[in-house]
Amino acid sequence: MNKKVLVYGAGAIGRGFLPWVFSPQKYEYYYVEINNNLRNLLNKNKKFISFKARNNRYESVTVPVKYCFNLGEEKEKVREVDFVITAVGPRNVLSIAENLKETTVPIICCENDYSIPELISSITNNPHVVFAIPDVITSNSAPSELKEKDPLAIVTEDGVCYIDKKVDWIGGEVTYVSKEELRKQWLAKLYLHNTPHCIAAYLGNILSVKYLHEAMQNKMSEEIVRGAMNEMKCVLLRKFHLEKGFVGWYANKELKRFKNTLLFDPIDRVAREPFRKLAPSERLIGAAQLCISCGIVPKNIILGIMAAFCYNNPSDADANIKYLIEALEPKDFLKIAIRLHSSEALYELLLDEWKYNINKLRRLK
Image (cartoon, rainbow, N blue to C red; front, side):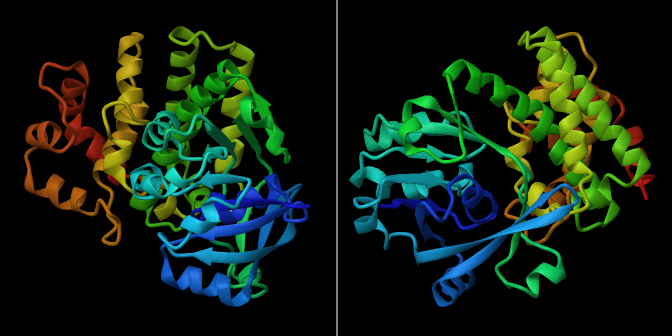
């Protein structure tokens, strides 16, 4: 009998990557999705196609959808499934946590935030909440020729899913690992994927391109991303003492991913919610602070931070960043919007070359 899985979020990871990890031939898919149009299409079509880019071509899998619930409608189903996966984004986790109090089955968190499992476990009193690392780039869209085959088509690359081994009975094409290995993979993903990935997206926004691989085709943009990657490699070696071979391999893998012309990874997906990415312990400000603590001047990460300050997308949840940077003096913007203190070295580094870095970013075009 097939296992039943309830997935919160029918986006890039939920719809694009998970069916390659938990085969629809062995797992029945139920979704929870707040986007009305997407939810209605899934319930109308009762299936979608996920395309995987591998060896310069696309493979595909058709995924039957048992049902897609609106948030709050899934409470009965939570009691019936074999496990739950969340892929809604860190800002949205609290909106679903209350609904998970009805189950003690494993909850797998694909949330790009290492603290999320502990948060959900504390709210639900469920001891079987674990962290997952989708080591993959998955678009929330697809090129037009694939959309013609299925309007719900989505593209992923051939990635790896790391999950805490305490729930390994779930099965699937998963690499179940110890907490120590999971932490190592998370540090690599946070600083060698998340940091340069979003920097590439903010540079792409300045370049007015649509997809990440287009941003990487610009020579100056590619140099900044590669430079940020090198700065973070030094941090992982000096501060976290990861193996040099592993760090070098991981960095090269990520650069190839960012340039993959088959993925069609939208800039607005990767760059969304800049204030979250600029939080004190997150992938931009947090990464720069780590560099400084290791004696590294993070010139390229600072350019990425400045690019995030300049992000312009009226439909983004953090669209007000554009108005704040235009309305405030740089020193006030850093204090009020970014929460940096004037005594911090990063505050001074950002201010010292503010105009120079802004002008350099303008020259991207």
